[in-house]
Length: 84
Image 1 (cartoon, rainbow, N blue to C red):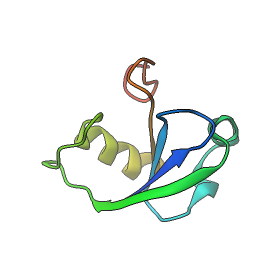
Image 2: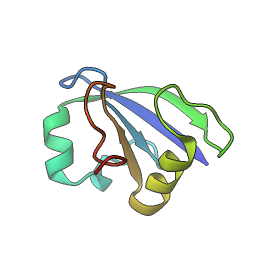
Image 3: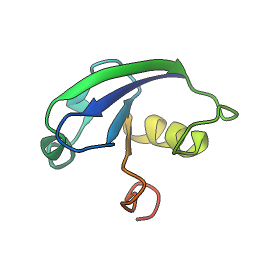
């Protein structure tokens, strides 16, 4: 599965993973608005065994498959996509 990662310019250390490149329409407005501008930073192949710095690959894959996106928050904030 391809994953496309974007950095929020408004929220420090907050990233959005998308299943389709530049598919910002998939993001609900209450999620999209606080992030401000998003800048593309990385494209990679995501697999269950892939190690990610601050996320579990299986969780990211599940969110991409079910919602089309995954949010990665700074480590000091609870992640509502995992902890909620």
